[in-house]
Length: 127
Image 1 (cartoon, rainbow, N blue to C red):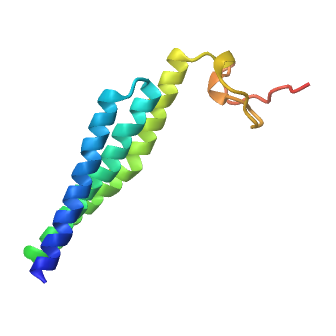
Image 2: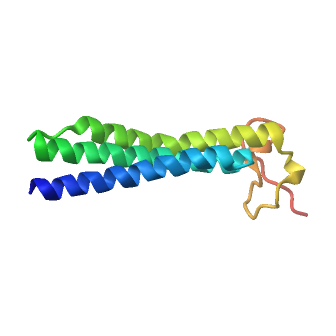
């Protein structure tokens, strides 16, 4: 049983480390802010999450105790990484992209982040 647990932990560590390596490589090599944003978000969720799950399996198999700290950290990262990426993307759009440069939307309110009034989304007159 210990050999099987060691193999599982090792495999998850290698996969998690690979995601972290690819995410850091993508952060360095990608040329645009929006492209750069994608790589570390995936690296943090999949890479660090994999390392934390491997740690949970290790302590459950070899220390005979279940550690919920790693599970809570993994859940926190899985929840906050996409939200953080969304905020960074919106900040980039507001700083560097004009509304006229964006593609047309099919939604009722268009690009709601670009409202001039500032009191929420306004209906766009499509006449």
